[in-house]
Each structure stands twice: as structure tokens, then as C-alpha cells.
Image (cartoon, rainbow, N blue to C red; front, side, top):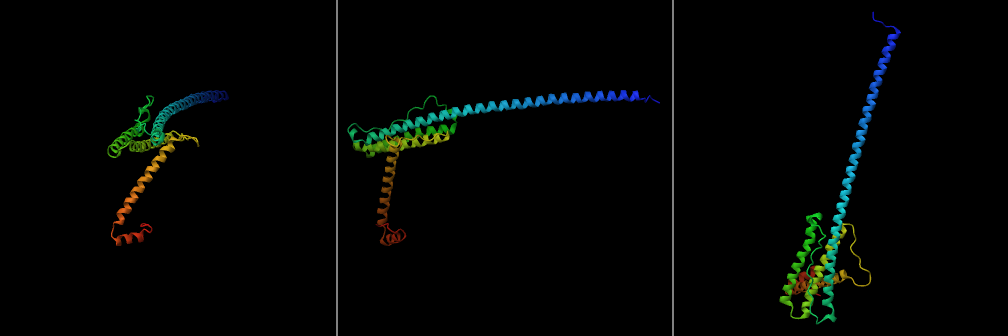
Length: 239
């Protein structure tokens, strides 16, 4: 029979204990190394995300800066249009000639159109096209309707008011996109926006009144029976 003395069991126990100890140490060491690797990976991932976020923040700041330049450029042009309206409405400047609405100035060189994207570029560049179309309309009105300096002043003031107010509107939209309120004029004093709006409101009211009078004249030429029927449906029409 093999030796099964107490000394034998003691040696076997010591050997097993030593083996288990080695295994436990290996496991702890392996887990520690794995843990360090995981922590390192998480840390690197966090750093990469932080770096990406910083890049996005910088890019958005550059986009906002470019849009701010666009808004200011449009507002400066709108103010020039208001000056045109004031000149043509001012009795003291009579005899100095009618002032044509200003041409749209070149955009600042600092504006990076590729940075802000196609849709924003179109929004800004469309105002240039509107100015050209408005100028063509003005030229046509001058040719067919202006027989004096007064007539030319009216036509120039009308055109400048409409395109200037449109420039303000686009600038306001751009301001809102970057989280900035439209410029607020002091309660008393010069107000370019109000001057343009007042002129456009006057034009629209005049146009609506003209259309309304034409409709009434046309309706009154209808047979009496037709006019009577309309008066029943629309009380006060013939007043």
C-alpha cells in the first residue's frame, strides 16, 4: 500500500495550497491588468468625445460669427434704404433730385459661405436678387409713370421701403437662428425700421383701397337684381 502517513497528507495539503495560491494570484493580477485596460479605454474614449465636443463648439461659434456678419450687413443696407425714403419724403430736399435706392453692397470678405452651408447662403444671396428685381420694377415705373421729380421721389421711396424692410426681416431671421434678439431702437429718436414699415403699410393700405374701389365700381354696374341680391348677402355694400 502507498504511504498514507500524516506527513504525506501534510505535504499534499501544502502543495495544493501553494497551487491554489498561485492561481489566485494569477487571477488577481490578470483582473487587475484587465481593469487597468478598461479604465484606460474609457478614459481615452472620454477624451476623444471631449475633443470632438470642443471642435463642434468652435465650429458653431465660427458659423454664428459668420451669420452675425450677414445680419449686420443686411441691417446696414436696410438703414441706407431708410435714408433714401427720408430724402425723398423731405420737403427741404426738393429740387436736389430724387434719390434712387442704393445698390446692394458686396458681402464682407470674412463671410465663409462654405462654412454656413448652402441653405444659409441662398437665404443671404436671395436678397441681392430681390434688390435687382425691385430696381427693374422701379425703372419700369419711372419710364411709364414719372413725369416730374415728385413722381420719381415717390417711386424711389416706395421701392427703397419694400426692399429695405425685406432686408430687415431676413436679418431678424438670422439673428434668431444664432439666439440674438433683433436690434431694438431707442423709444425716441431715429428709427430706420419704423420709417420703412410706415411707408410699406401706407402703400399696402393704398393698394387695398384702390382694389376695393375698383370692385365696388364693377359691382355697381351689375343689373339691379344682382346688386339687390348682393346687398342682402353683404349688408352695407352699397353705402
